[in-house]
Image (cartoon, rainbow, N blue to C red; front, side):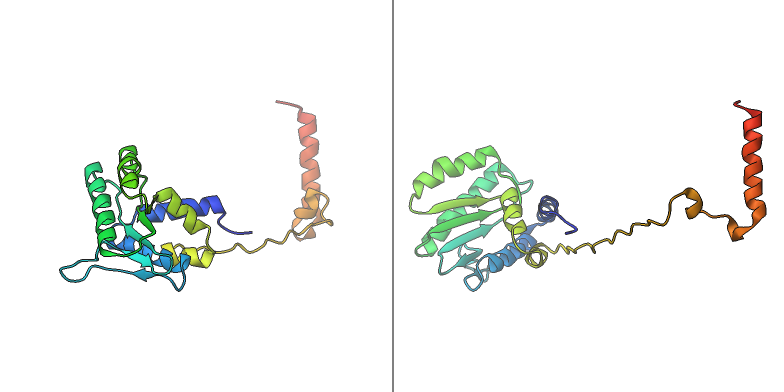
Length: 204
């Protein structure tokens, strides 16, 4: 039987994601990309004056681009500005963007979600704009094999050894479990004397 069931594993993954910040979260998303799209994932990091070209990683064949940003505790206006800037910068610098995916280790506030749905999606109808927040990320990661989960979020899970149940048919009474020490007859006699005394004394 597995030591960690699916629901418990998902909670463990959520806890790990919540603690990540900055490049730690981006590195984790790189590992996720490598597991979800083996052979079709290219991580990208900022280098030089041109930065990361508004792209933290992409899948060249599938034409899926993503931006990974740890937004936990961030102001709403800053999150909205980050999303718009990364999306528009990606579309300007890359061809044939089919899916743009924003990855965050938080659940986006309703105001940010409405901003994406009411403003950005109508503005760019040719691109599928997705948001993978904390719950979605934890769910996607938890669906993978345990070894993959361990690799992505550094959770080490093990399987419990199966316990063998031994039925002790030969034990029928308490005396079988706790026999008289050393088999001394005076022990049994002392116990009988004690029971006789209690019967004569009656209830207190």
